[in-house]
Image 1 (cartoon, protein in one colour):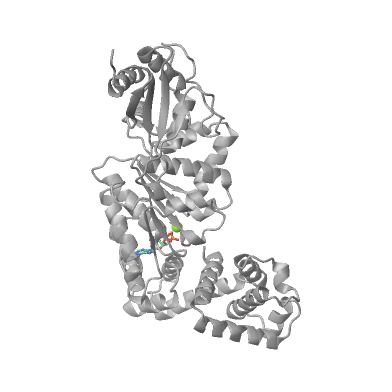
Image 2 (cartoon, rainbow, N blue to C red):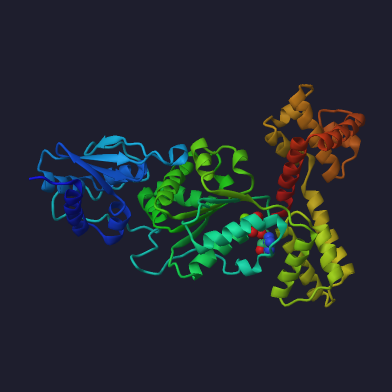
Length: 485
Ligand code: ADP
Ligand code: MG
């Protein structure tokens, strides 16, 4: 009797559907497209390699049983895997993978409870895990979003226009725009977390009924490590695979963490393939993310990358005014302007200053005026100065230029060492109270004229070499970060 692949696959699906939960069915079987039936071999198309592995690891017996039922014992199943997107986006490549072969165990899918082989006792894997927060059709989803971070409290300026409008577009049609993933990057305190959480809140409160999850990459890593420890990695990844909108903050923390990157890569692929939205932030542009696997970096480029820059004076003033308004506090315009002028790189620092200012005003029962603002700021700025010392500068600069601290203070006059050394001297002069002589001593006993020359060279190079200037600005941000968070 002639049978076509659709009829056969539909019959298989009926059996499968009767044996597993609805959610697993929708996740793992609904997206499969039957492709051909030739010589008793049914070929089905699956969206990714990961998908294939997951099916083979968890549902191989069920699939085998279905094929046996439909095609008899000689029947075979073959997978056609759409090769991950990227360059070959429009050319799905087919790899034929025979079913039933025991796969090398992957650590994210270690549980094989489903492998019982017999007809009636084929059960849905029973995940009892701390990650299993979303129940079928249930609403006990924990998004970890801060309800204060919304679009209406996010001030728009030239510095964030692209990021903000991309964020709005994503919030309106999560997973359905070309901004997937949406990657926002920028220095510390420039509003990345606020913006991505605003997107999350907007989606969560909107009509979509989507499971939004916010997680810092640090927490993601810790959860993963915990799952490894208790042999529960499958539940971990299973949990993440249910998410409709995954917001992962500060991906730079994944650098060097190979195993965490591995699992993130798979989760990323799966979610992306299933049209789920991924939103990420990083403190630097993706190309500068060190210690991240190339294949992960290339994924980040699929969607839109937008930067958040330092807000200009007016935007900073608007941010201050809005914050104070939210707290029901009035600050005179001259104070707002003074603060906006004094703190220009980091909005979180600005927030810290405002809180101190409020505290001083209420403790001393004083109105907030320019005098109080100046006194408060002075304390904070002094704190900052005492925290950055030459040792720290040397470490940060050495790491940036990929050399050791010993090389920096050595006698060597190799070009790349000299530049790094000069930059570190420049920062030592800028950010510490050390005399030129003392700075020279910290750099392998050099004299004060070497330090003067270094500062001059850095100034000159910043004038003439844009790339170099960018490096110095980047380092400035890194140095300030330590003092301000
Ligand atoms: P990042 O994640 O980039 O380090 P955050 O999102 O934590 O920065 O922002 C630091 C603080 O500054 C937050 O309290 C945030 O609300 C505030 N902030 C930053 N940019 C803006 C903005 N454009 N409008 C309003 N508040 C902002
Ligand atoms: Mg942040």
